[in-house]
Every structure is written in C-alpha cells, then in structure tokens.
Amino acid sequence: MAAPQGHSSDHSNSSASGRGRAAEDAGHSEGSREESREENSVPHTFRLAVDALRTARPRPEIEVDPTRPPQRLAPYSYALEAAVVQDDEDLADGRLVLLHDPAGHDAWRGTFRLVTLVRAELEPEMAADPLLPEVCWSWLTGALEARGLECGEPSGTVTRAGSHYFGGLAARRPASQIEIRASWTPSESPHGVPDTASHLAAWCDLLCQIAGLPPTPAGGDTGGGVVSLPQRRGPQQR
Image 1 (cartoon, one colour):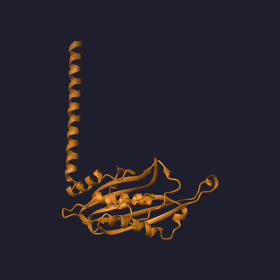
Image 2 (cartoon, one colour):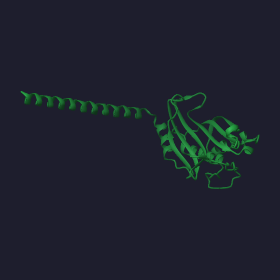
Image 3 (cartoon, rainbow, N blue to C red):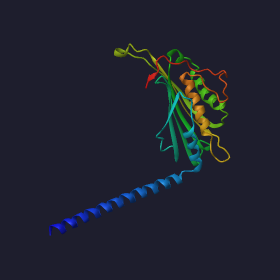
Image 4 (cartoon, rainbow, N blue to C red):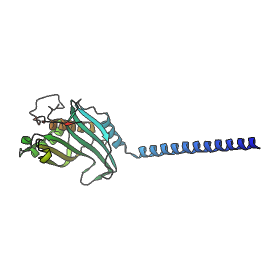
C-alpha cells in the first residue's frame, strides 16, 4: 500500500504544481492585457510628445534621466530630471514636467503644459545684484524665443537665498542659490502635438546658462550677446 500512496501523493503534488503554474501564467497574461489596455488608453498626441522627449539628445555636459512625474496635476504626465556636469561636479540641476489634459485646462488655455524647476549656486556678490531675478526670468523667455518657440500663459517665480555659517561651521564661506520655477503652455501643431524636443533644447540652454556655461544657440551662432553667470566657486560634488 505504501507504493500506491506514494504514487498518489506525487500525482497530487504534480497537479497542484501544474495548477500553480497555470494560475501564474494566467496572472501574467492578465497583467499584460491590463498594461496593453492602459497603453492604448494614453492619447496618441501625448505619446508622440513623450517620445520626442525620450529621443532628444542634449549637449554632452547635460545628463538627463526620466523620473517619477506628479500624479495629480493632470490626467497624463511625464517628467525628466537633468544636471549640468563637468569633471563629475554638478553646476546646475533641474526638473521638467510635461502635463496633458485632453479636455483642456482653463488656466493653461491649451491641452499641454510644461512645468520646470531650475537651480544653481552663485557667488554671493552675484546673488546681491538687484536685477538678478529679472535677468534670470529673461533667460527662460529668451531661451524659448531663440528656438523660435511660441508659448502662452507663462508664469513663475525667481528666488534667491543665502546661507551664512556660524559656530562649528564658521569656516565655510557664505553660499547663495538661485531657483527658477516656471510653467508655460507650448503651442501645438495642427495635429495637436507640441514640439517638445525643441522645448527641451531651450530648457537645456537655460540650464547651461544658469550653470555659467556658454550656451549653444539653435542657429549655431555663439555670439548673440547672451550673458551667462560666471561659474561658481565650488560646485556641488556628485
């Protein structure tokens, strides 16, 4: 009797294992179908806009990576983070978010919106310039104009902050930081797709400018009367 019992037990285990594999395969299949349905539900115009961001190639000093986008600002969103890097040191960094609402948004006056944060450290004497906020804002609008880009409803803030060290940190020199937060509505093509690759290029121009690097205008002219911030005293170590 022992042998039949053993055979029966092996058969039972084999059947259970088979059912487990079948259930696992069914789960994977259902998950794949769910992912396919979610992908198909994404508007075609948004997929094209995101693809343009993914395939864009910025200048070598800029490292760009996708990052988790905000979830509640719009039905669809995609985000990138970037840093201007030289000799393994960060000179400036930022984040660019693409938002899309197929139904449109009253405040945007469109169906797409770009939102950004850009920041860099400055020399204290540069940060003390009373015109610095206006100059930094003009860098953003100028970068878009230099690429021939039209945008609507621009808004944002330019913030400068300073840190002074005391006690055990008194040996450190004062540090200052500039931060640009902005958003704008990119113009759309007749097919309803904005030129996100060019907007990314303009944003990278802004990053380089605030980092103190000479910009590379769209037309290849290295002149243009554009003034960048001088490179900072001590870039942040990566």
